[in-house]
Length: 490
Image 1 (cartoon, rainbow, N blue to C red):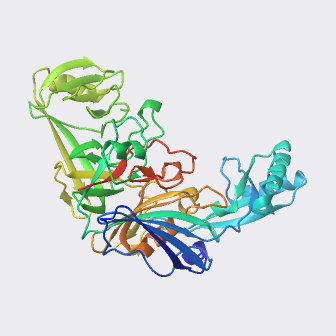
Image 2: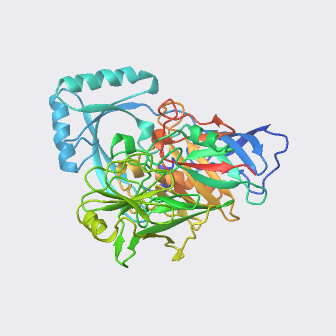
Image 3: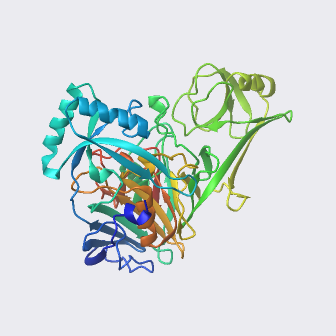
């Protein structure tokens, strides 16, 4: 299935523009919103409303398409997924027929991406109802459940196949030539805690804020603000990289997309070295993890803690499971790593923490200066002006992530270094459907990005402008997230 088919076929033109201003000092930008060919859907017109936010920053409210998708009932496979191999799907067809309903077997091709080939799967579905007849789909689903089948009601706009929309997107364009502020990352009050973008933006008096990268939902509940990937805030490494995954490097008023690797090593006064496994996260068996005062939680129980002062002096050796005091860092070891600490990190000794963050595109180390910030991305979308989706490398190689439509938060950099931030709301049938990875990449290229990345999405997608949430999160309320990208005033 071609990318053009996935995008819904024909392009549409942006024909209506409404302009408002906030405040009067805002100027026009060298980076411009595209005037032709909205890239998604097949409807004849799109609208955009422009708000000039402040010098160098414009906000666009973009709406396109209309709702023509309806509902169906999808039969779940033994794996719990809504798709499977042909043989498995055929067996489900027989079960549905035995229940007295007429199923259809649907072949679905998950398109290829830069680092993974296409995948063919099969779905079993029952019925097709218009948008206003969802109740009938619910009735059929109940009948099938009563017959012992596991099913769900699906809105077809979420599938990722051909659609007419609609789409509701918010786009912030920050012009490199006229913007006089800076960019920063924020983890809120701590690494472990999740906070809303609104809260983080308000704390820093940010003009614009969007949610950052993915956070760890598979750890203890009180630690789920932890970023999955590299996080640097004001020159301090607060979360290690997942080697090779996409990230956004922010410095002053510049932003660029690359892949990163982090190396953190403890060097004892006696010269012995220990490679640390992580920063500010739960420790596994035999791991060594560095905790900073920004962690906001206790170190794990069942290991050894070495408390280091600002000069790297080991000021205390303690049983693990305590908080990190301000002005200190804690070296924590489990198993064999705890044994190394017992032998090489005695109280009163100096233990140097050597931290290196390497840009894998340039092969150069980043200088951890106070103006350096890093946010881990989710999936690379555009590189050097071409669609290059790195879903497998970035941990999202699945039908659900590549093909299905979800709310998206997107970041792009133009040829002249201007920054584009966008949210495409989704999971709101009849209002806005979101985008899949290919559509998100096309959307960012249309906006003028020559480099683009997918940040966290789904219910996490949030954009705050001038202390106001301007998009509509799919949860109905703004979700607490791990980190945020903030645009700070001059």
